[in-house]
Length: 68
Image (tube, rainbow, N blue to C red; front, side, top):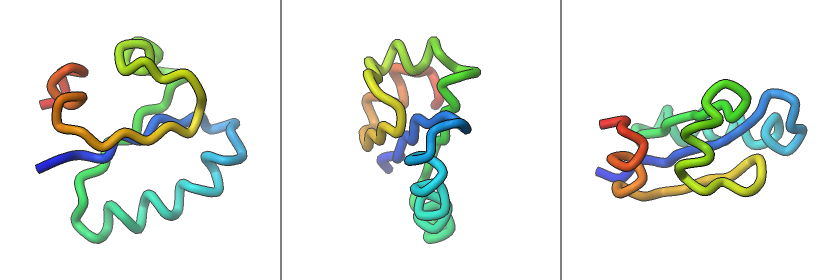
């Protein structure tokens, strides 16, 4: 099953707006992996995240970030 990877920062106002929506998606049984780029910058760099509030939906990213 694919996982939604949500790259965010607590100080990002766009992230704060989208956060409750991501929580609803997760509550519906869709796998969500929240990644705080302030603490997990290596994962954001590995995923080539170029801006905050980035969403990716891929199974390849899951294995690339060693989250399996």
